[in-house]
Structures are given as structure tokens and as C-alpha cells.
Length: 122
Image 1 (tube, rainbow, N blue to C red):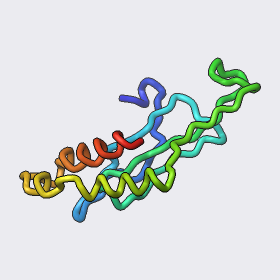
Image 2: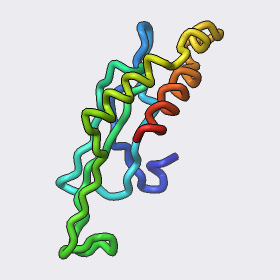
Image 3: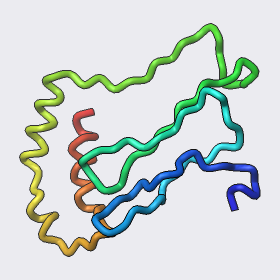
Image 4: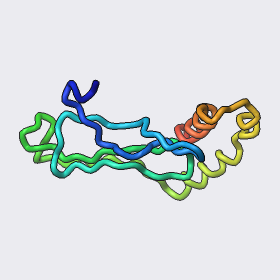
């Protein structure tokens, strides 16, 4: 369906991996390919659902490009913030989440608890 509208996937490897399956369920679709575009999968030990990314430079003809400005977006993680994050994670009541009936396709409870802690600090 996406290709019929000239959108093409940038990810071609599995993004959800369990002990018994490997499935490509996440993707970034683009309708133009830049020679300098790079896409990929970030392998983490946090979850079986892997984050994906796309890096692309805008052409000088793009209405979004601005040759005179340079934008850098980054999240600042200072040692005190990292220590506080670790402390908050150890204080999280993971037991109540783990005792819930969680099937292999439902990791929402764990994810929400983790993201809630992360969002409060960053």
C-alpha cells in the first residue's frame, strides 16, 4: 500500500526480537532518498522492541533547509541526573508490574513505568 503512493521503507531488518520470533514491525517510510541518508536499528538490552532512526540532510532547495543556521538538538545527561534516574528506577515498584499477567506481546506496563520515571527527570 505504501509503495503505491511512492513511499518506501528505510528499515529492512527485524525490529522486534523474542526467543522464538524476529519481526519487522517498525519502519520509517520516505518518498525520496537522499544520497546521504542513513537509517538503522539501535540495539538495546532494555526491550525486545528495538528503536529505529533516520538521518538525512536536507537539500539546499528544500523549504526546510537554512544554510545560515545550524541546529543541534541533544538531551543533556549530567552525572547527577543519571544517578537520580538510577535511584528512581530502583525505587519503582517493579514487582507489582511483574506480577501482572503479561503475555509476550504486552510489555506496556513495564514500558510505561520506565518512561514515567525517565520523563520526570529528563
